[in-house]
Length: 402
Image (cartoon, rainbow, N blue to C red; front, side):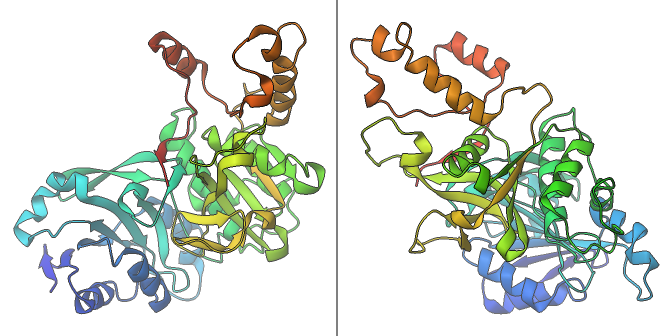
């Protein structure tokens, strides 16, 4: 049963039954489609025990598209949104003003937009709280304030396309931009309409309403945001394509992946690997352990698995497979001068060198017996790990074994 506070601006619902979920749907009337409600219900029904709904929530991302597009349409749209905050624990109404006590149970939030097509806006959900999600995933922390209580939402940013200002490629770029702007202070925040305006030299028509983007337009958007991007096409890197994608993601660099046959773009934000597999020889870690990638697909809620092989394993998996990805664009920092394919060649040359290579310098370990793991790490992280006597770690932010 819902409990209302402050002239119905805040609603607390304990999600104990389907009737309670129906109350959640009714409380978001006009801001959520039945399809999106069913998606949220299926995603969180086994995890969420309480939802706190903030009605009349001012969301900066929606306001950006509202003032630049939706307010100019013939139909009238509300200028505010709803933010739904989900918790793993049952919270009593008297604790509503002390939500900071429930940080450990905080799953995250979903913003609901009144744009009548795809309601799900800016979303941060913690993959650690979702039992059906496994893998190594890039995450950052985002502060949340509810009735004076400060919480921290942890996850990778997600947003569905609104089909007017943003399509799938815009949403994929926005997710990456918002991740970098939150994690690194050198990058500024970009709102959805601003993102749509980042491609002009390569555009083939008006930018809004958008008819879609090409991989080269995405590359231009990355450049205008402040990256020095690289674009990889499977046909040009047939033997290395999946390995290079793994190396960048393992380094904490999410990428925009293009599925040309499906006319779709997704954000690859992590990988799922089984490190219990034993394999002789000298392959890359990706050749041995990789089971699939973790993606944010704007048609589904976050952390979708993109599998390597059939059949579909248990868990939260996409209908797409790794082989469906034919292009990806990686956002590189301007001072990263060597691309992944050059590192592969260089590291192999060093390890096999006749005088200084592994076989020449080690009596215990031979090149033929190792499995290599190649990733990028910052010099600061490398030096810190060296001082501590441990190996450097990649910038990927979360790790859970399957």
